[in-house]
Amino acid sequence: MQKLEQLYEGKAKKVFKTEDPDQFIIEYKDDATAGNGEKKGTIVGKGVINNKMTATIFKMLEEKGIPTHFIELLSDNEQLVKAVTIFPLEVIIRNTAAGSICKRLPFEEGQALEAPIFEFCYKNDDYGDPVINDNHATALKLATQEELDAIREMTMKINEILKAYFLEKGINLIDFKIEFGKTNDGQIVLADEISPDTCRFWDVNTGEKLDKDRFRRDLGGIEEAYEEMLKRVNG
Ligand code: C5P
Image 1 (cartoon, rainbow, N blue to C red):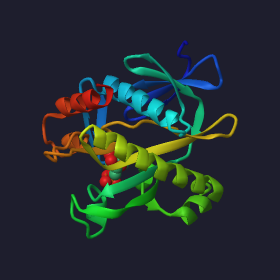
Image 2: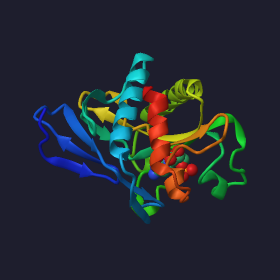
Image 3: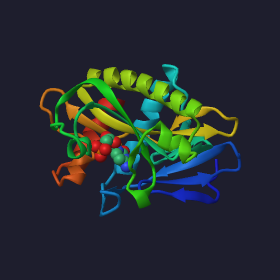
């Protein structure tokens, strides 16, 4: 499968057209940003790790009945996916309080949440990806109410699957962000990636952070943390 015109370049990935209008190629990059692009850097080997980890997790989710955009790995840092139009929504689930919610609300980092907290954010750098509710999303025509309901239901299922999956690997899934897209034939599928860039992973025994917070908070050992997560997921 040949890469044709580049459709999009984001902070961590590039998306290319292929000769098949129903298929795109995603190339994962080592570039890392934090704080809405204020902090920039490189995490050596990240593109390969996130490409491989996303492939393994999306395949596992498909087997458990979650439709995803993933088709196949093409190389260490490229994968073939279904062509989708991404909903401009960041869908976040929190199982334990950490990150931005501890700045916005009186939660302590590490505080267990009795039930998962679900958030929609409007994916828009100019507005700083604000948290929104269903009314904002439908008023801004980001998705219909039926689409939001479908996305919420799939996300809650994905969280239950991922929590158990990572726990088996000695990882506490603190929170994560996922994105959804619509295929050319109108199916809503899980898209984008699931990786240490988009999840908080804490070791069950030591509490060690094995995710992008090491980069965001200058904790060191970034590459090692990403490699450790790939080892736990891919064996
Ligand atoms: O920063 P915050 O605490 O809101 O992040 C919640 C989760 O969403 C974290 O796992 C973070 O890695 C992920 N996230 C992301 N991309 C963003 C914002 C958050 O992957 N733009």
